[in-house]
Image (cartoon, rainbow, N blue to C red):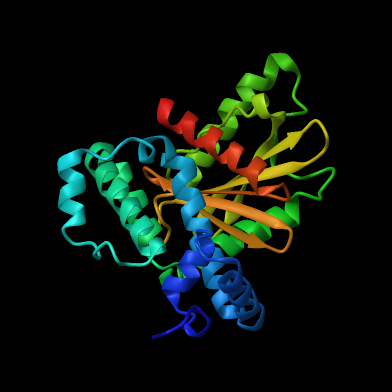
Length: 278
């Protein structure tokens, strides 16, 4: 009989480690494994990012009880009761996700697809897109005099609305996709302005910059939607810059900032909520 000590550290065990479903001895063994296998550690980190993004965007629906008939349908294909506890708990999550697919519609389907797709399969184009967003953030955020091309923050109050409309129309026309301006004042961030940037092969994209009263800045990188970028939230970290990125309608978004992940996620959720009201 195979003991826990000799269980292989495979994807099932790594998933159980991520969900905190291992006993202390097994968890310590996986901790050691991840320290010695950085590729596996990176894969597990990406799984966690997918899980957190799905929970942040759709957690309220996932918390709803699974309809009885749907639960029975799902359980017909699940392991017998003798399966390990972490396998059974994942079965319940699968049931919740299937129920969510039924009641959540198209948005739910897209988010589930992203959550179940291994992050390692994301295309190089998607990685490059996120890298360009992080690079643009790193280049322009430190600028004092010219952080943006169209500066609305320095406009007199009477002219600010006109400058914002000019910025929005200009960027929308140049990148050929809607560029909304978001109100993040509830989180302490004011719109500084925006600029036009080159993307892959010279394709134009846009960047909006917001500044907190404490001096921190975040940027929103916008471009035409790309099939390589997932519809639901994804999270990446490049150095000290964290990025949440997603697609909504015709536009791809990447929110970048050197902020705690929770704070950056709150801003991403505020942007997404304003998208839904437009």
